[in-house]
Image 1 (tube, rainbow, N blue to C red):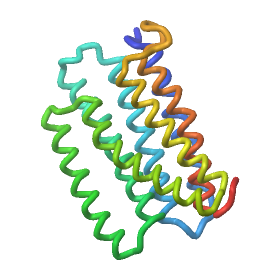
Image 2: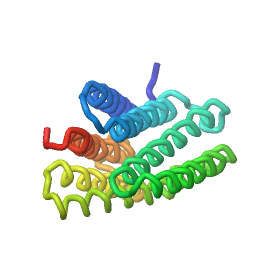
Image 3: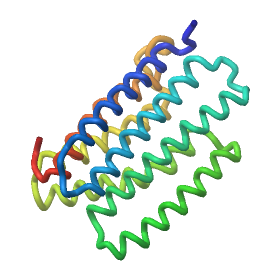
Image 4: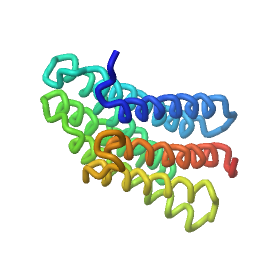
Length: 214
């Protein structure tokens, strides 16, 4: 079977393996902060799911106008929406009281439902996904940064550094810049930077759930 975009597909599948491994390691960690840990697990699992669907769409569905491609691509973007939802929830747990968190969580879930509707109604470009997850990324970035300024812990530095890399990666993806247009395009470069960002975020997740640098 021929892979239509091998670099993009293989780097996507590499992200799947990374995310699954990190989610498993996090699930094995003993912690009293189970809610926080579970949302981080959702974050990594949803990111892995999106990478799998995205790699499949780029590599093995040749007819971009087919119903199958539309379904797989929509699931990719909805998976990114779940990543954003998890980022919001992590940020709210770290920054707000239970009463405020409950109200804001309901609002975030409502916005997520609207986002899914927008994707299903054929506004299913990657730019739509960026518009949805960028506020969540900036919010969690701010939470990590403020906590780092107070606590000066390495895992918090890793957290906002990882999110900063995520923003940089999205900018590169939208710019169309690649190392080699055919063999390693902007999407593959985006995945490579994301892989580093994910490791940094895992370091933050472990530190936040056990209260110390792993």
